[in-house]
Image (cartoon, rainbow, N blue to C red; front, side, top):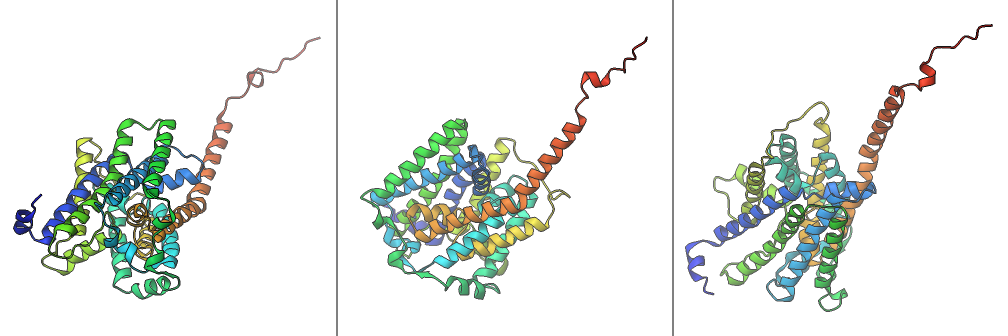
Length: 377
């Protein structure tokens, strides 16, 4: 097919932004509808209550991996153009950043992508938290926190030849691994009675990640300019978009610049159509300190780990980047420990107090209510 007219009519940046907006729109609609959230999946898993939330996350991950690996096997996505597989990576950054990000998403009530999706549904708490994530991420990338990030990242480096593990697998190993993940996810979904719409929406969320890899690869192969092959990610994308809006009168167009507004718009449309839009603000129970601390940990941890729960955990994981898998595993560990330390103990204490109140409020046995019988002689 001849794409010359398209490339003559629009600049490289404009096409990249349109592709990002399309991918973001798909992700936003179906992430909102499926309730896709790594934080929710982690809490379910570590509390031994693995159910619908874990199944939804696994469905998205499995669909993303299967489709992306199919594109790689058919040559639609060239792994030689994927930056994560061809540059030096940081294992120390993946571990420490992943732990911090996992802790932060438990405190803030969701990962970076979930905060963006929820903010479009009227949740002001997550909007504020998302802005804090973005500001801290920018400070970690180019500002006052960048020396600390660079120092931690330098502790344990992994060269480009060792950063991917596709060569460790048999032929079509990535494709088979994706199929296994998806089949296991479908089994979980069936076992826990996840409704069919949520299953479909979860898989579409994952397919949007594969769509990003495919569209940017197509653009790179047909453009006369250098185009970065990438897919869905939020920490760095949100930081660059916000700082561009603040510092420059004309925002340079790119995939990321289209992605973030696309996700917001997609989630907003889905919430409005399904009547799930609802204004929510900070209350005495929700507080602010917890959201602020969690968002700050996510902003720094995401930049240190090389991406957020989606950017590193899913987008990087499905192309078999070893540092992405380490970061994702560390996020699960950090989330589980923080939930146990902060929330689970408090929830157990509340449950125990509620049970004690219920026991106290129980009516006395009937014999205890009866008047004493006095035996007469």
